Each structure stands twice: as structure tokens, then as C-alpha cells.
Image 1 (tube, rainbow, N blue to C red):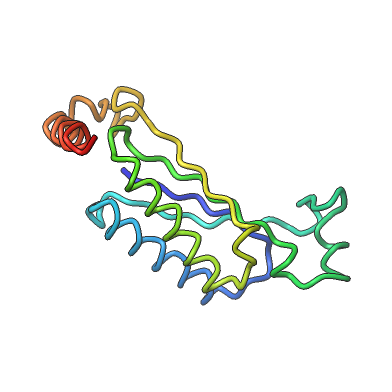
Image 2: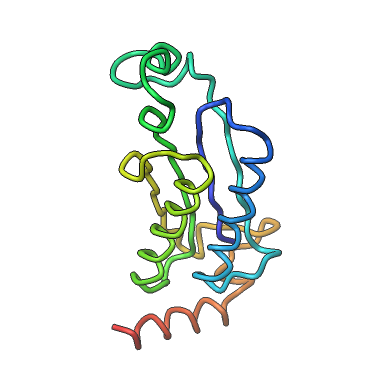
Amino acid sequence: MPVAHINVLQGHSKETLKNVIRDVSDVMIQVLAAPKDRLEVWVTEIDPDLWGIEGQPASEILKTKPRGQVEMPYVEMVLMEGRPVEQHHQILAGVTDVLVKHLGTDRGRIRVHIANCKPDNWSIGGVAAAILRKAEIEARAKASGSNS
């Protein structure tokens, strides 16, 4: 179920973006103990003419500043609620590390947002995750309650 949608400026090589997908997936697997077959990582490239930075299109700003100081990758992650806050902190740091490594972006420009999803608000094949994965969700909630 874990999903990461990564928005970056157009212009990175396909190999770079493939490495981002691989390494973000690895972070999700390690930190969240998520099975590979349940996670998704998407990269959306935004045309620099259509991304505003400092009140100007990024294409204009990139003429005078290096990409690593201009680009602000934005990652939206959707995770089933009930995970411990420590996992959230680890995934925020891990995804940021991957983007610094592969994109060369200044760490302070990277934004990662976790949207927690209630199991009744996420469907798998039209059936609420709360129904399909009830035992897993209960075990995760119990484990996070014992960590408090």
C-alpha cells in the first residue's frame, strides 16, 4: 500500500530517475517493512516553464543559478495510519537522503509529506483495506500502541 509520488523538474537523466525509484523503494521496504509487491513509487517530471520558483518560472531562474540550489523536489507519501512516529521520521530522512544522493539537490530544499490514510478510506480492488487486511492493520496498531 505505501505510495511515494516524487515531483522533480524535467531534465534529469532516465537512469538517475530509475535509481531514485529503486533507492526510495529500498528505503520504504527497510523502514516500513513493506512487501515489494505492495509499494509504488512514481516520478513526475515538471516542465521548468511550468514550475514557479522565487516568483518566476524555473526555466528563468535556472539561467542564473545551479539546479541543486533551485529545484525543490516534492514527495507525497501515502501510508496506512497506525505506524509509529519513529518510522515516519526514518522514512522522511531516508527519502531525503536518496534525493540528495541522486539529484544533487540541497538538502534544505527537499520536501517530503506523509499523508496518513485510514484503512476504511483505501481500497484494493474495490474493497476497503480495513476489510482485506484487518489482521495486519490490527497488529500494526497494537505494535505502535505498545511503543508509546
